[in-house]
Length: 293
Image (tube, rainbow, N blue to C red):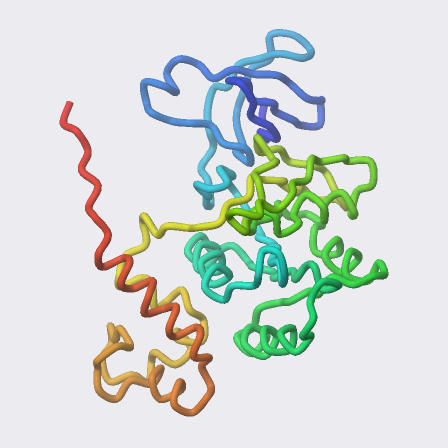
């Protein structure tokens, strides 16, 4: 039978299809082939009874995320706190780059609006990211923001991402009353939220699947290459054809359309500065050597 892994916990993979939900284990050849089944995987499995079975094959993935470990994702909701923890252009851009790299559509959801003293920050953020083409939903006291985000779920697998303590589990609890996902407090020493979600599980919401996933406060670019990075900034990509050099890195090259856009105020300085930082991180990344067998 075919199905989708909706939960992975303690070596078991819970597979769902029209026939029901099955608790399965992977065959030994998965370990030998160094294949790790992921939540979101479409699989072929055999059932040993009405509730149990074994995974036989992982069908091809269109994408996969490492943190959180989910595959076949359609859209990523980057839950971004404005206060406690404070808003960070750098961290938001890291999430956006991660999603762009895997061809996942991003949605930015701004939380903790009620704690924000200077509301001008919201307009500043919208001016930067809506100009690029990103969707932004601002949390509201009424149901408008919840209805707006829920309307995007239909027939899609959605991942909630964001810094620990940004309000991912709280948001899902608001969308689905009674879900009672554990929420975390903010660590005063670190200014970051404590991790509360221990595993990845897909939840059926509004005719779609939504993953509640562990929060984290940093992202390392382990697989993105130098030549790929400029293409992950949509506003850079839109201007790159006007650069003098085909593989322009938008740093020291003459007649660079991206730098011209920066000078003209069409590209946000925060985005360009973050690009330079990310580029430096990738250039200085230590190579990963695999041990010979």
